[in-house]
Amino acid sequence: MIGILLAASVLSAATNFSADILGEPDTRPDTWGRAGVAEWKMRFNPPAGYRVRILRVYGDFLVWPKGKVEPGKFAGALFGLMTTAREGSSRVWPAADNTMLYVQVATGGQPSRAAFDHDVSAGGLLEADHQLVVRVAVWLNDTEREIHCEPTFVVVYKFEEDRCPGQ
Image 1 (cartoon, rainbow, N blue to C red):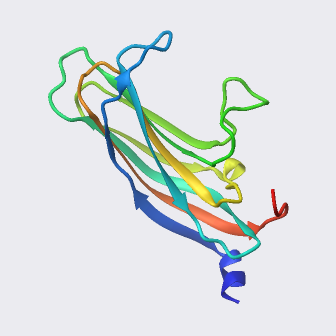
Image 2: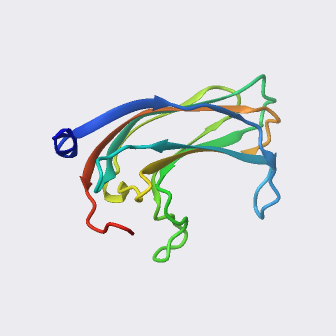
């Protein structure tokens, strides 16, 4: 009975992650500075025979360098939420079908904040492993400082019947 009630409900959970990222020298074409990434997985626990659909995500993404930054030096940072499905897209280039949220900011020494509130239901069906990947990354970091990245957010979700069990 509890599983049926949960499956009919819209639920929410608040969370926070943080990482300090300096990155490694970025040698890809048309890049400079350093790039690095940190990743976590949130695991949902739906009733048997159900999957998780993320409906909405709201919160903010904060970044700041650890220490004084030389004038004219900058770093970009991103926060993304994705499923564990294959990265990339067979239908669109360049794109990532498994990514439901992508927020980016930049810092030249001062804290930077990006508030967000997005309906992600169209891309929010998690794979059968019920995991939501949380990723932060730093790129084009020529500050030579670690960049503190901190997404704090609420995930609004529901459990829905798995129409394709075993896939």
